[in-house]
Image 1 (cartoon, rainbow, N blue to C red):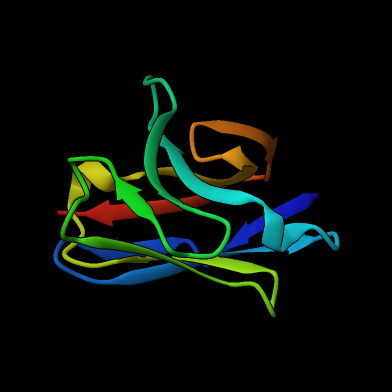
Image 2 (image 1 turned 180 degrees about the vertical axis):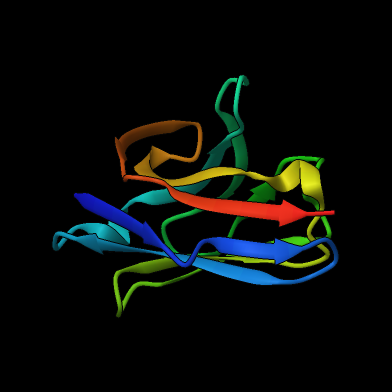
Length: 117
């Protein structure tokens, strides 16, 4: 599975932004998907995950209630809708795929999200 994230950009605090990740491969629908982020000088951290059929999602506490992960298996795409953005959300955002949300095997190149105060 090859993954490519897109949609990042520069926004102001309080704004919304949606990033997406397109995948290649016929087995996309069988994988759990996740979004992770890495801010400068910090370790990569989990943001959100979704099960293979979209029936289960989970979020990091820091984004719960503000971010929404979704997927469209017909389009081989996973989305992350980010609302009420904060400067601390600034990071490179990566999408990933794996057998479970907790076990990611494939990683895409990231997309930069910058939130100004």
